[in-house]
Image (cartoon, rainbow, N blue to C red; front, side, top):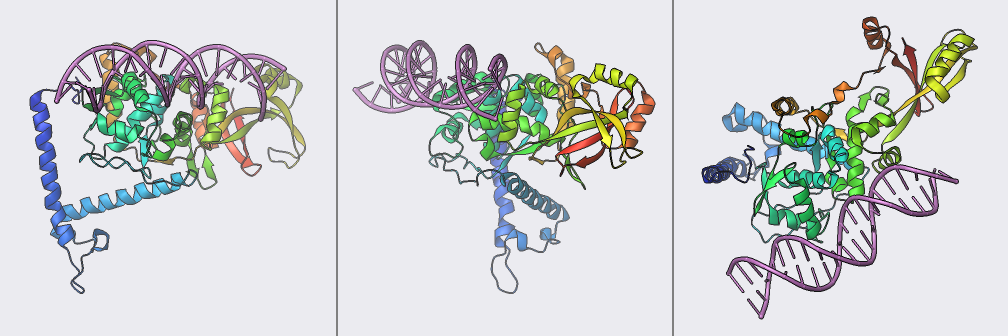
Length: 413
DNA sequence: TAACGAGATTTACCATGGGA
DNA sequence: TCCCATGGTAAATCTCGTTA
């Protein structure tokens, strides 16, 4: 049973209430030294950021906690600024303020998104309720794991709210659609399910790669833009910053379609909308001779062509090589976020899969099952080749055409 | 790449029922 | 009687795959 279940006992609810009270009291106590601290010279109040960082009110632990909190705030701000540079400028949301617990939706923030969960949402056609789950987590600033339904309704449906994504009626439909996968609910509250349980519900066997920061403004737009960013988060997760610029390993559109359930045409549309850059890749094989030309034509089909090496980049100048087009690489724009609890989530996810809860265990998708074929350099490719000389491998030689495409060297096969 | 059409999603309007 | 939540229906809008 989920600890956040609406069928939780009255003792659990009472304990939760007590916890909130204690938290509020602790917050008040902590607030005193911060607001009471004054400059010895001017007598004016000093903001936390201006206090001598070594002080920590005579507590190393407090200093450490406050420094980490301060850094986290800075990190989040930097991530949002970087992410938001290619979106419309963030607006300040207006949400009804008459309810004392109504959170003020902050559209300048970003939501941490695990790309495997994003692909699961697309694959299971649960992008719309999934978006509500992500925004609900964003609204749940205190991390309580639940939200009042009336507050969610105000923030996500009122025309004056910058987080408006649909009307009340549609939100009711979405809440019904996502029940059991993203949340459980009672009359007044929505109990958000954990990332591990949502992943399991979406048929994801394991979270791989880096989570990314998706701007709230991207999710609060139309459903098309939200879907585009869910799809693009996968590419952003695979994008790595190198001294030569952003890079990612090639991946075929068919593979992408299998992982995301998004067809090739829609993939291109999403890439345009979320500003994912597609980079073509070409492989260079053996010197063009009649026998290997026939062999390669048989396996590579229409992708095969002949490349004359005028500059001698492959060997002797003027030799002709067999070359063929490889799948594209995709450079996403979302910033990476720390893996954080990913290891723990995966452990929980593994337990859920092993328990064999009725449902889609057999269909669980594990991205690790995809065979690694592309390597960033010859050394890594050679190591793999040494273990399995039969397998066809590629390693990246260089990029050309102002980074528009890359040339790969074939190994084995 | 654009046009097209089928299907899905979203919204508006209205009716109904329960509670105060 | 009023207010609010819910649900049925139809129309508008959006998404996505196919085709040229």
